[in-house]
Length: 291
Image (cartoon, rainbow, N blue to C red; front, side):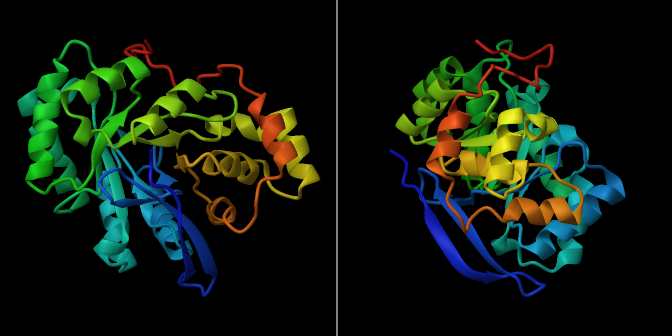
């Protein structure tokens, strides 16, 4: 089973605000901050300024991907922030069309070049691609890790069937599975499988691209317990030992999302949120392999 939760107390951001942050342990002993900044959809100057603000507020986990087209903007933010590299946890992903051996290796070089980094803290296969042998992709991923270009590796959008295949080939490489996960897409069996196999589950679109904020059950519970719908939703995920990477661009929302570690989710709220699931998948591209 996963070696879970460590709390880092007395971290103070640049505005003097004391933070609590939960870290989860990956199977190789590395730690990943349980809350990070998702950057899908953030571009150019807006992306740079958003990341800089997030870092000032205390975020240390940044999630990007080759497909997002914002890695150079993130690189600018990192350089201008003066946060030491070793304090950051940076994830990127190789796109599903670049999973052939040589394409994968070249894609990683481009990612590192755009981010102006020597290594990634987490490198993921962005989507499975049944047209390219997984053995070929995992061989490239293994060599990238051995070369020190990625400290940790994993996958994204992998189902249980995909994970079984990957684990049968290179179990040591599969430390994280980043998938869409929120109260209206409660993938309980996938979560159980990940826990059983020492794989961290990271929830992207944890607010269902804003849909969770308008869910009547979540809104009523948020009002009852004097929390925002976003805080309640993120807390529900965090208490399941899931990493969350919500996207936010305003300072208000960035700060609001951070304020989830110094209180417990009421049992009544947790029970009601368990029943919201309606298999509402908001990210479903034509090439997706959900089988």
